[in-house]
Length: 178
Image (cartoon, rainbow, N blue to C red; front, side):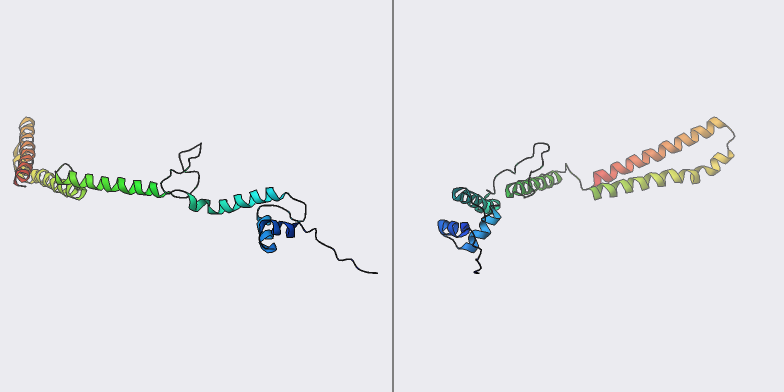
């Protein structure tokens, strides 16, 4: 008895000849687009799916760099996570403009560096602290000898007012000198 060799249906060979490619390439491409070449299939449909798959491979590179990214319907976030060159370029230009604006405002003295402000606040707080803490040392003897409550109150008010006025006049002198 003679063994019959099982023959494949030959659809792959026919399609490879139709498409003008090798059988190996035809098998890979048909498998990729989901066509079982062991069963009968429409060659035109296979050609269409192969072309679409080839185009899909090139799609990430075919996007224009100046296009807006597609937006999802629920949020304003880009639907795909690919970054678009135009967005980055716009952000870079925005930040360059902001830096130029800040430098201009600093030059016309509308804007002051935070470090300078912190240093000035520290200096003024030290002046206030020194002026207020010197009051007890100056008044200790005078207040100890006083028995009248009104007189003690008047002396304290006068010293506090003098200390605060000295602070203001010192700050004004330093501001005018600068």
